Amino acid sequence: MKPVIKELILKRFRSIPSDHVSFDNPTFFVGRNGSGKSNLVDAFSFLSEATAAPLQAVFDRRGGISSVRNRTSGRSYPPNLGLGVSLGTMNGGIERGRYAFEVKALPNYGFEVVREQCWIEDAGRKRFWFDRQKNSFRGNVSGLSPSLDPSSLALPVVGGHARFAPVLRTLAAMRVNSIEPGRLREMQDPDSGTILKPDGGNVASVLQEIERQAPEDLARICEILKTIVPNTTHVHAKKHGNKLSLEFTQEWGERKRLKFEAFNMSDGTLRALGLLTAVYQKPAPAFLAIEEPEATIHPGALGSVLDLLRHASKHVQVVVTTHSPEVLDAKWIQDTHLRIVEWSEGATRIGPVAESARSALQQHLMGAGELLRSNALEPVSLFREDLIQSNLFEELS
Image (tube, rainbow, N blue to C red; front, side, top):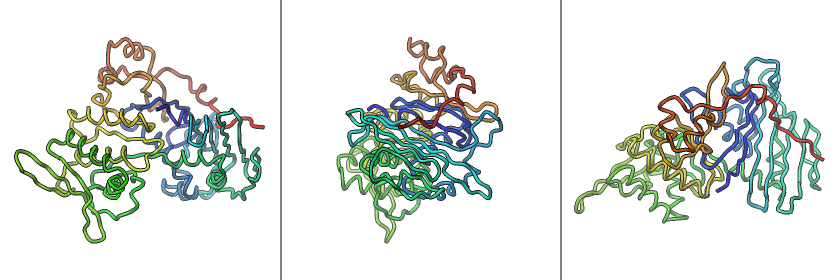
């Protein structure tokens, strides 16, 4: 599947002063602990949450705008926080599009949206757009005149219009998962099961929904889980009063079977189940980011995890953060799949692999895992001034 999110533009977002990131499918973001990988994928969580919740609530969940806005000194850096995405083919006959917004911090933890822009092109290359500057709103779609609050985005309002609905739906359908095994061990409150929580804390409900909509996918989850955790043949949600838990079945020999609840299972087993559920959740996300899938999983089982992610990339855009050479040992991973995340001079920057590493991969002299082990997987050299020139907005008329 071609990437739905073709490019991400960041300005003063968390540890990233200014950068633009292109995507393949799947895309692996490789960097050391503390390099800023989680800050990068949080941009997708931020955009997705902002389609369904007030912008104030999205900031508050992260400790307020002062915690989100990058505070790196430097006169050349843009003063405001901003995010933008370039979009590929979307449902609704949209061939490409773009959405961006910029927010200015105010005293006493306040903020205001200083600009917001969206455009899409249909199959006939006709462009529809809106451009909001503070309280001023203009566009070429008739009937749009939203009442704008300075601290609210316009897209959640105008996204009800057929022209801009595909953009809203695409952003809303982005998912970021960092599975926490401890959350899967706990008794869970039932919900609709249509969206897996970022930490996997409602996996029992999601499994129920998968079984309801596509029992063959639940069977596939169990089949893959068995390759990761030998003898584990089945998992299902189990009711405990008004709570749900997970029950695993292990079988071996002739008619030898044991059942275990989640609190008896290892971190690796629970993380693997969380990853499987993230991939097979219904409805499928447009974009799925998985943070460090290798954590607590035996290196020998990572092949199955990589096969799962490669399979998922055929129908979902997949992004993976990792610092594991074992993950990158998959022979199908090419230089186009890799982006290097590094922390330098108090800031995060993201770039494609350097020419030397690219040449080694293309000529099959070394794999990506080998390059990482030898500290040879480095980004291209870019001047910081080059990154500053990436623009959030375009001139529209």
